[in-house]
Image (cartoon, rainbow, N blue to C red; front, top):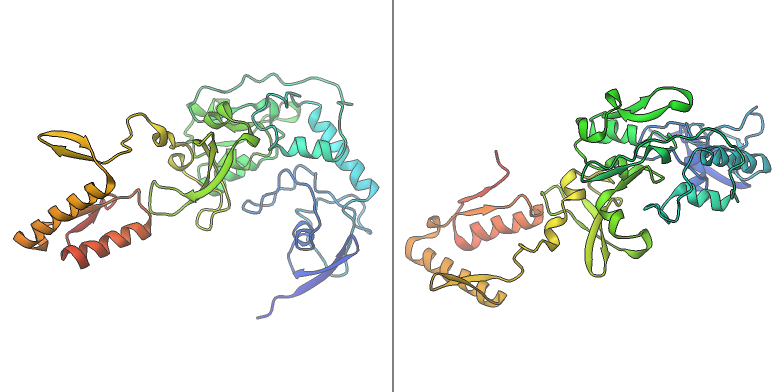
Length: 353
């Protein structure tokens, strides 16, 4: 069944999209940039920050493009004087109660509020008034939580509920006192948070930051290397943040398997990489003592011993235990080796409970 299409014009550019597409999505298809804070393609539509407002003749107000459905024949202006003035005012209101510590903030260079303030020429705080003075939440080993920098976009709330399925945080209080917090306004460390860090991955400002990563590297100091998580066979992708040839943190990327979602081990369990107790050279026991050996020597010894056991006692005298820290492809090769080379079906998996 064919999907009904609608055609509209955005900044003079004609674009045709399936019925039900939002104006924001249509603009993205047409290559037209619209700034957003609360919108995220992996989360439900929220329409709270209003940063994505556009001008549509016939509509009385400036609608939020992320929750406005595109209709046939619609005319959209994304950069009219009225739109630019509205966005500038929104930014000024946000900055009226936002710490101006960009020089020392860990999200400097990776902050949408900073980027949009530069884009729209917001350099001062025209709206003066009361400011929040929340205590910096720094009592857990994974996440720094600074509610003074929160812009109430709600992305962390939706990520926790819709991606992780935990609903640990939500909006509390009203008006100027509104904030995002666990139940009873306790710290994350006192809640049932599993510290997956998916809230950190979607935060557009410095309210949520990776504690380990931001304490040792600035955003522009790291080289990002996309790789596969080693903790289980799911195959989640993420980016290793490398500084001076050392992994200093993990951040989300757009993985085919996991999107940007990661578990606590995948996002924060990278300490073993450079741990001083980690073995970096094969060890072979000689005269009751482990000594360092080359990879060729170690692999040759293993092959020799396995061959001797198979020849003397048959393949079923051998057994193999595969690892949940390997990828599915690696485990497939191991079972293939076990059955085809060693000649036994004695293979099990450490995660088979």
